[in-house]
Length: 142
Image 1: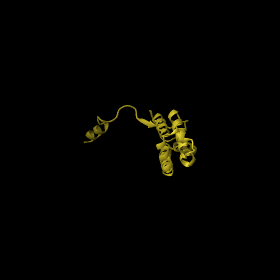
Image 2: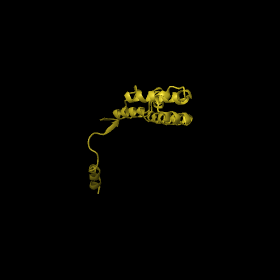
Image 3: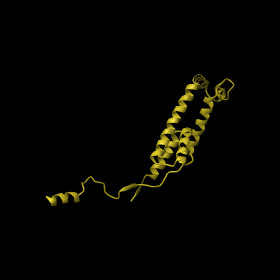
Image 4: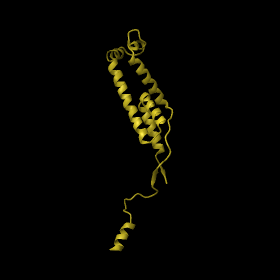
């Protein structure tokens, strides 16, 4: 019986992974500057916060009347407060997603704050950029 028991311990099951084991990298992720899409969304979000925060941009004398279609200006004028609240809510959720990823990666507080503020104002490109950095950090073959 002892021979059978030791033989079973020495043989690995056929579905066991082969090759070197992966270990998490100790490399920390720092903050990075937004890329092309990030700059576009950052500009659009800042413009949206400005345009929805004040009645002037959507007023009859405002600059958006000449740029945007009339139906969009009227919609924005009628639902400005609701659109502004939804925009704040959506970007706060994006900021919380980024903050959670930072906490999972055990980033320092200053880097966490930078990423979170960037997530609030840039939006989903921040999440994409952070996921890319986390994937690059990934695992180191040992």
